[in-house]
Length: 172
Image 1 (cartoon, helix red, strand yellow):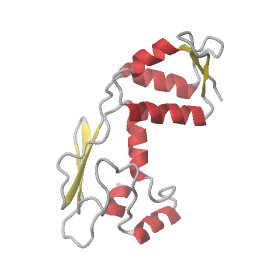
Image 2 (cartoon, rainbow, N blue to C red; image 1 turned 90 degrees about the horizontal axis):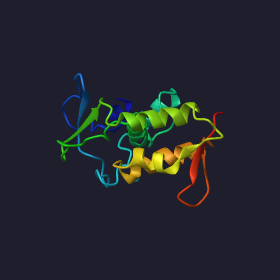
Image 3 (cartoon, helix red, strand yellow; image 1 turned 45 degrees about the vertical axis):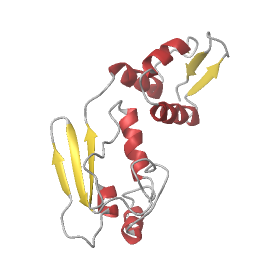
Image 4 (cartoon, rainbow, N blue to C red; image 1 turned 180 degrees about the vertical axis):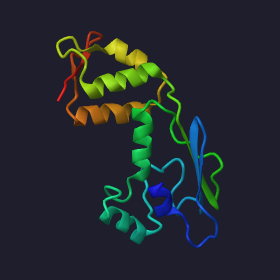
């Protein structure tokens, strides 16, 4: 919601609409994407439309820093094994984002929670094939975000280089 307030085009009339359904949240905001931002580069390109609003939200402690809203939205979707944001309906005059509330893959969610909670036996590890089978079918971006985060948190380490290689999960 804060991302919507921060990035809407206040030169256009209209309201921000938030529609809650049992399985999804749909947010519509006046103004298309800021100049230079597209669906394809939304995670890589930042173009703040309302710097003062973004700065105020950061100053009040409501956001960590400006320019990371979409990254956080994608990250939460991946961590919760949900579909990535859907921008169908977005045009030059409106941004429409649908956030799906349904878990797409319970095995993926179980793997993520196991890794995050450190419940895996450190000595046994998770066989690489098991990890591969769970991640199969997820896009490269989802997998990279999850593995990078877990590695940065020093929660996982890869031991071995053959088919017998295992990811080891460490609790903090």
